[in-house]
Amino acid sequence: MKIPTTLKHKPVLTVENYADVDGRQAGHSDAKGLSLGLAQWNDRGKVDISAKVWRYTGEKWSRQSEELPLHRVLDLAILVASGMAHFRDAYQHPKLYDPANPVIDRIGLQGDAMTVAVCTDNDKLDEDIKLFSQALSDDGELIGERLRTLSRILAEMGY
Image 1 (cartoon, rainbow, N blue to C red):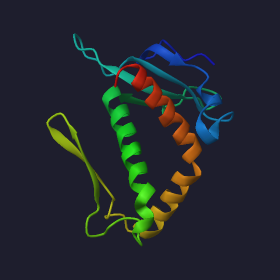
Image 2: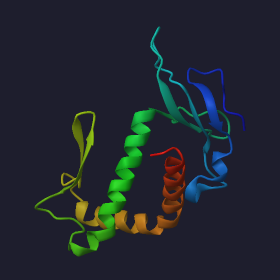
Image 3: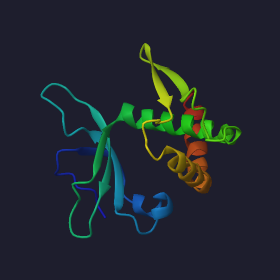
Image 4: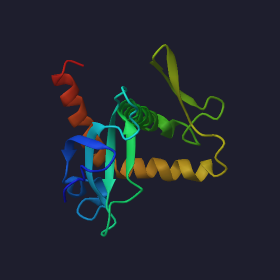
């Protein structure tokens, strides 16, 4: 299925077979494609690049398609990696985190730091964190494959 090029987001690079590789949804995903292109929120004289997940309902392109600035895509990748690093050793804590210190990482970015913390405001945290940890473990092969691929590409680029 071809990603539309007539909408506000203007694709430059595309993955039009994303439904075939979308993790557990592979083969039956409504996320039909990914693209990097010119952001739909661009103002005159200002150009931003964005990443977009294109979702299709079976009848039309969905309003639930997501578009993110590239730095946010990378920030999410950083959050995933930081979270995975935490959960590797989380078994050491009865609640899978230290309630006295819910901050699990501070990652320096643009002169400040992104604080990664367990969401202690979640009323159902005790059960949700166990479910999250189990799902992360269950998806370890899917996520690990993508992280290894990302690591290889970054190493080839000199990062």
